[in-house]
Image (cartoon, rainbow, N blue to C red; front, top):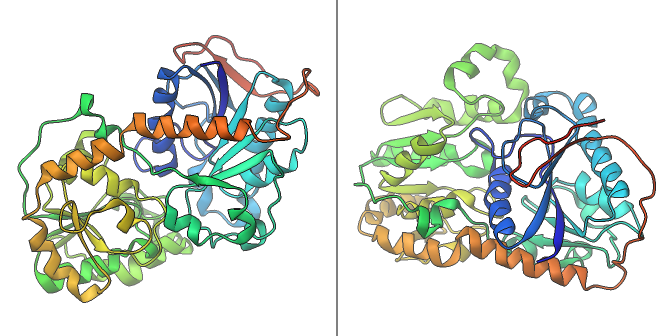
Length: 406
């Protein structure tokens, strides 16, 4: 396949991320499969990214995630600086056939504003589409810019202007669903796990209350704001409460965390995360919002652990009730579903993941969308670059640094 894609992962975390990082993990899962299909990938990321690619573009040496706790007027330039570097690269590079963008709001707005002569764009919507009504309600990318969702339920809630730009949805994947990399099943324990960033929409406060009331052990695994370990959050002191997720933790979750029935262990990654989930009786998703994508849901299935949750957002698309998990619309029923989940067959969960959520399946779907976007009218590019500019560039078929310049 003769196709060069600029994959824009953004400035917040390296690819792959060291722990939590939903979008960056998706990119790290997608890119190797695209390259196996013959797609040449130029990754716009930070300098510390280690994912093998054909070229890397970077404005920042390392991830800027810690900046997100600062006031908007101090941090708003980070994404814009990254996007300015992407725009410079695109104007220099007529060989870029398509941009696959993953940068919230500013990525879509900047690439749509480039106008005629810029490459076609597929912008993946990983988040709640109610967050940016002024942008999504007015977006006009012409024929050149298209978007895709990560679930049908997400797109169903999109403003009309955004829906008019959509080319469909692609369910996210996990490397754990690759049968060639599948780990041996492990024996389930008694604990239940909630894996993910601790934030109101994920409902950790509801999960903790249910665990205390029903008497099952619950492990909370994920960061609180920018703090990945309990000791980091404790050391941050009162100033940390400026972050809304930190306030949520202290006011609504921490009162139920006793270190015995309910524990918070911080961010876990790699084999530690896999062991935690694979050994759980169930993964709990007490959602208080319309979850758009559900990467943690897919990972749980791939590890053979059934899902128990509130049937909101994408969960009914990902879970077959009674086979790979148990869903309810009633918060009071969650406690009854947790012990029942122990009767579900982990092999069925792993089979579902391999058939629907393997990396190769996601990559093939994206290649189909790339070709669809490129066939739209108005996507032709000029033969010569518009002007020269500067951005750090690493090149190499195996992803190693070959040249660098500014």
